[in-house]
Amino acid sequence: MTKTTKGTLLPRRLEQNMAIVGEQIKLARLRRNLSIADIAERATCSQLSVMRVEKGSPTVAIGIYLRVLYAMQLDADILLLAQKDELGRNLQDLELKHRRRASKRN
Image (cartoon, rainbow, N blue to C red):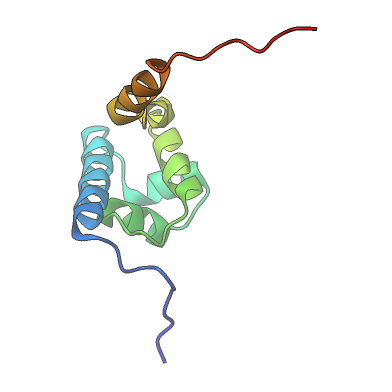
């Protein structure tokens, strides 16, 4: 009997993005001439986990992704996520255009 994980069906765009991230991690590993076993040892995880990261598996915990990035000295790249957030900034700017009065101080 196979184990099913709730919520593993993802929108196609998200699956594609996960695959791209996995491929980028794999290419970074290959550029450094490191084996999957090397990364697994440095990241203190299994080789299977590293292989799943490189495939962009959505069932791998984000902590494993971070460990793999850390093992290749790419952990600071995670700070780039949602950094621009143009939509959020535009929404915030729209909200700021409404004039509001300061509360009265007693």
